[in-house]
Amino acid sequence: MSGFNAGAKKMQASRLLSILMLLQLRGRVSAETLAEEFEVSVRTIYRDIDQLSAAGVPVYGERGRSGGFQLAGNYRTQLTGMTPAQADALMLAGAGQAAEALGIGGELAEARLKLLASLPPDAAAQADRTASRFHLDTENWYATDAAARWLSPLAEAVWQARRIEIDYRSWKAPVSRRLDPLGLVLKAGTWYLVARDGRAIRTYRVANIDALHVTQGGFRRPAKFNLARYWAKSAKAFEASLVTETADVALSPLGLTWLRDVNPRAAAAFERGAGAHTKPGWQRARIPLEASRFARLQWLGLGSEAEVLTPPALRRQIAAEAKAAAAQHA
Image (cartoon, rainbow, N blue to C red; front, side):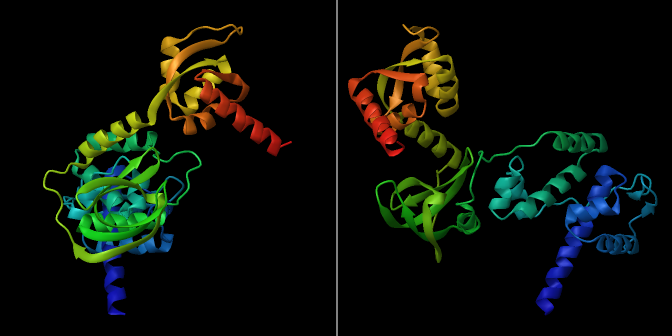
């Protein structure tokens, strides 16, 4: 029970400081707004304000529709020192959902408040206005949370340099791996784990992890490893490995619009080399493509608004796939 009380007091102290900094940043704030901000009752906010007053903070309230609590005069707190966890969380300040998924959303919110409270009044007000007008959403449309259950323990393993054991669904077959987790990357709404497997550093899609065990064994991170540099090089190599073939294709105006959605790089290549085609309004060009086993499905998805002219093998694969789909839906 004493542990619970200690945790509750720590939470209240953190909330009191956050309320103090919010009042410093925003001026007058209603009890209802504070209650919504901190997900507590209005009655709890009133008790918190009483605690601040008892501690000597010159906070007072005004009743009425435009009323609320505010600090007296030019009072400003200097209690803006960040904890190590908050400083780490601040590195994700542009991606609040990512911080939440990693289990450090609370630290990020407190770090943001401390940073704003440390700024001069005009700069703090400008930063707060910017945050209220622009929002970064890193999630893809129709995104699922398949990776969510693993992110917090994976983040902890990365922070603490703890070795992990996973069951993983690779594109070839299910495998089990014992890994040294080096970092997590959020790419276009999809989470990836960068980890060392023996001597090799590889990338794993977090949503494809079926089981995870964080061991008590630690590991030493590679001294010269840089996550951002590794990811840039790895992503470039991956994209290059996908484009293994070329094809002559023809597109209607609508087909080109659809291609921009599903494969912007192919659409850009098409527009650079586009020339006239025999069908009115259509154009043709030679563009790079992924391997045929992937390209046939992608181009089949463009329906009758696209036509692969060459190579003949890809034309046959698309025709066979379309025939099978038509028979299945007949």
